Length: 60
Image (cartoon, rainbow, N blue to C red; front, side, top):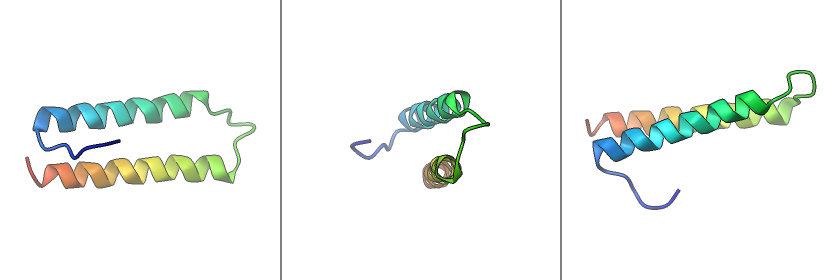
């Protein structure tokens, strides 16, 4: 996503945008046709979000 984010308000904005992206992915996913790759991608996004949260939390 570009440059490192160091200010708390920008970090929160980043996390909110990523959460919105995840929600959009979930909304657009058809449970009947989802395959393992779709689920793996969701897990990757969640793991990435958790990692960023933990990284940001250290500076708060």
